[in-house]
Amino acid sequence: MLYTGPCMFTPADAPVALVGYPTEVGRALRELGIPALDVPTEHPKEVAQACQTLRFAGALVAPGQQGQWLGAAQADPEARRVGRIDAVAFHGAAGASGTFAYADALSDMIEASGYSARGASLAVLGNTAADLALAAPLARLGFSDIGLVADSAPEAEKAIRDLPTGLRIFPMSRRDASVKALVSRSDLVVLATGDLPTGLLEPYHTLLDLTGRVSRSAVSGTLLDLAELQLFHLARQLLHATGQRFAPEQLRPLAAAARGTAAK
Image (cartoon, rainbow, N blue to C red):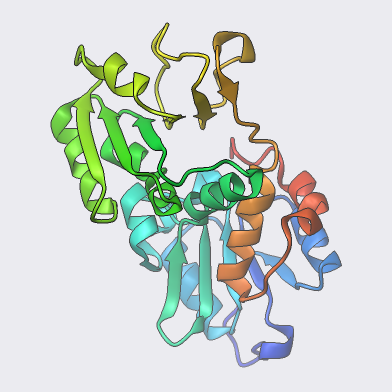
């Protein structure tokens, strides 16, 4: 466990805790002027309490550890929707505050890409309500209507509570024969999890593939490039954990150091 003796950090030198990341990430953060220390991956709640006692600024949580951290900090709505925490702030009045920064990073990346969402139609394909929640922040970009497709219609309906009011929302089962018609009326299609049905996309569609399994040759329309998503994600994580804003472009060395942690 972390040492929790009398020596504590001051706000000026408050470090970021790294949960499940390689040591290269700590070095890259220090190059950005952010002190960083590895912490144990076991007993997340006790680690969070120790970080608060030692006055850490926040924590970055690697993919393989995010589910365990859900009960270690006060989860915000984004984290509760997907059942994961990827960044924690220890510097606020509320104590340990956790978020799932990946969801908002998707919105940041799409906005930066120049894609025109206002008035367009969105379809999100997943298996569960938690899968569909990954794309919930995209609803704030101005889409007029959203189709939600999950393994069952009741599962898709659960995701409606995560969306803003005033939208036309169509929950549907993957087995419903109307899925193709629903997608045909959509402009942006998000594949959150699962497989992309054959022949579903038309040349006018834009696909955001969060699974990373769809090949360019399988898409008749436009496949959004996710190469920059990690940069936007790290920027959101650091904003939550430290309160500091970084341009995604500044974080290329940090992203390079963090690659390969998804399997941890």
